[in-house]
Image 1 (cartoon, rainbow, N blue to C red):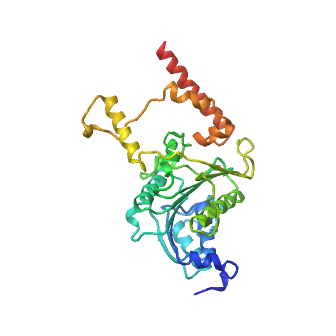
Image 2 (image 1 turned 120 degrees about the vertical axis):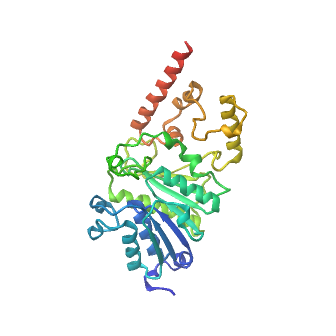
Image 3 (image 1 turned 30 degrees about the vertical axis):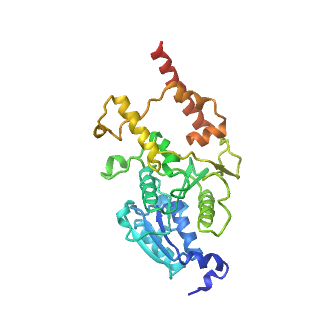
Length: 332
């Protein structure tokens, strides 16, 4: 049934009303995207987030002070119902797990601030051949980062984001008090609500492309970056930078997995595949692996390593140069 609230976007409502979308993460970006989807007329939403809404969230979230202390997903479900009562909403106050989903959705949207959650979403999307889109920010919500994955056609999240396994995560006191604390979770950072709105809006443009309503996926790259407010970022301010991701990780490329297996077995001098340890480091940070990064331009360096500002680049460069120096000392 057509509702008057969608009078100004009938074409989009006609498409979204038949879609079943899973939204992983109900934070500032996730909550804004859920609000946008509701106002566009999405037919079915599954909301997944384990956290309660905190007072510190009010300053940059679609929810208000009335929701403090309550489940984010349950409050967002009520928010959606007030906008679009025809939308079927399932609220799951859980960490993402594929077993939570009883049916196959049309699209998975991840804005979780956890690398582990993003990796699990990526694995699920690849296995079920479901398009997925990952959204987040660098620093104080100053740079937007959007990556979309079309299983079997584009590089996956791990092809791009595997470097984050070695990122230094800021300290969070919850690691000492929460027995279920996620070590890959990024603690809340400073950032303006206006920046969050821009990030969510940009991510929604990619969603429009994925469902065929806009020609926004015409670029060869699959990662969208926008410098919103970082004066030290090498990307042009308030402009879209599209980066190409090289396909080839052990998650989505069987050939890459087999190659890593052979290398690991050769390093261990063991012909027995049963002794393969996937948690073991696959390669050493050698001089050959480190030196090329030192020569990259600012923009190329940011795309290659995820360093979003010159300050981050300089810290990363110092670490690389230290590793090269250690390698030189060992050789001498």
